[in-house]
Image 1 (tube, one colour):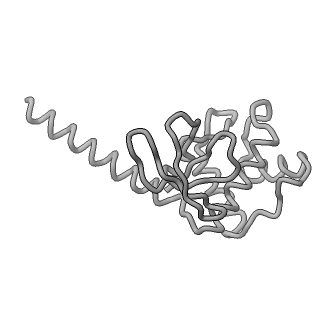
Image 2 (cartoon, rainbow, N blue to C red):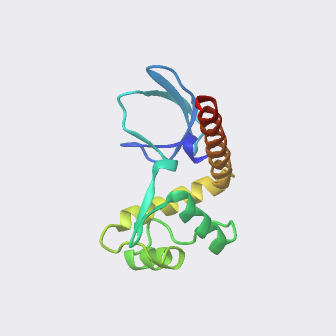
Length: 152
């Protein structure tokens, strides 16, 4: 589901992709439910493409959200954007102890917390997509094997 949730540069909050077209997409704000056009020239990123820097590499945002959900028992995070940097980083350390202290900033943690709260408020599941991706990968692998058999 995170592949349909968008963050748009210069606009606060998150947006759900409703329909796509060649030059124009229709999106809906998760915070107020208003729909409006999104032009191709705007800088957009899907939450499925976001990851958090760790000492071992990158951790997908989906995995961070799962860890937060396990810690919070699907409740909102008590830490918010007005919390101090120390509180933000101590929360992140509880959830993702190996995050990169040099590459992750307080503003990043604020976004993660705000996004998590918004997604849980609207009942958006982070695990649906992972299962769908695993099914797609299995189907692709099977197709490749079938094509390999046909060539032989």
